[in-house]
Length: 508
Image (cartoon, rainbow, N blue to C red; front, side, top):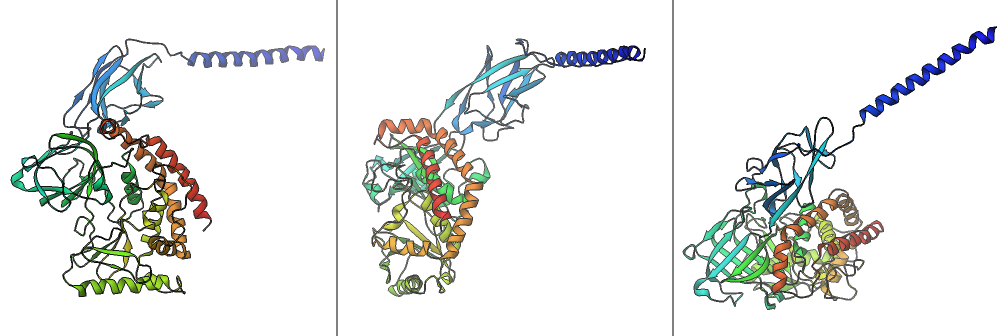
């Protein structure tokens, strides 16, 4: 009797568990609402308002037709904040909720907005941007249309700048005495020529509407021709690396399009003149800017005693041989310590800043700028009574594997320094690779760069490649040299170069 009386209780217990489970499952099923298309969910308006996008010159109103949002936008402004009105409960891109007048969207990518109701129904809109890919345009009209044929003689010019809403429009009339001449060494011999612009007053030639992005005003400006640069990023990327390493006086390059006396010449890079000035290489009036340059074509120059380096005085302008003798004597004293048998265990660092050596090495190693071996375009600056410091960095046309190959983005595992007895090779290889203190700094800065900046560098390449794509194509119709034009090739080369450097630097 006892067993019979207990059996129903077990049965009731299991029935109760089953009922609870069934109820729980039915509740779970009820919470899953399939997404269904709901054409009643709509975007009513879609606008880029100037108040939320200060880079714009006016509001941009997009058209909305058949679930397609269409409008025109300059490539400069691919990151923008749209303002929209909708009857949807939520608006998402992917799974990220979008807030009107707040969410920043990268419109370089294909964009689909998903409008959702409270009940889970959905309607989708795609964005169709008609891109205006014109860069800021500089028009140079020389007096009487005279051709620019000299690197020494300036021509008066009217200078007109169409800022394409990104920069302020400017006009320098002939009466304001803007002048232009040729510049460069080997680059001046090429069909597409570089130029130097001189103004009578200090001006910011391209003034960004964002105060933090403005180039500082001075009289002298440079237009780099990029004739040897198919991606139009060689110098730009190198300078960006320098700024990421916080190297003082590192240039900024703004890509522009140039028309000279009515003839369209393609993409140029506008940048600062390397000179001793308050808003350039600011080492003071009594400071010093040296250039080690194989062309050896400045008025004041000397060959160094220990390594036969071609040392030219870029700034200041000298008046007497005695002034040159003082500069030469101090350099030779420093160089003698580098050449000494007890190097690096002497006081050579009393003459030169150790951090500048380490950072300079990283930039030139990462970009494989073998110009340092000649040496060419190698600048060194110094404040009065202070130490030498490497920089500013300059001229990366022959970098990224171009030296001796004639093609950029080759040989990513090549050594920076050559074998042989070139003066730059022997001096800088000894200076940069012999002192454990410098090696330790290189390791420290390299780890910080690869950890905190390498991703930003790759993003920088993507952004600038997108901005200049149209102008690069137009340039190619005029100057097609068979160079590499794909920025993805550049990015892959940099990744390969980083792998090589990781191994090289870890083996110090």
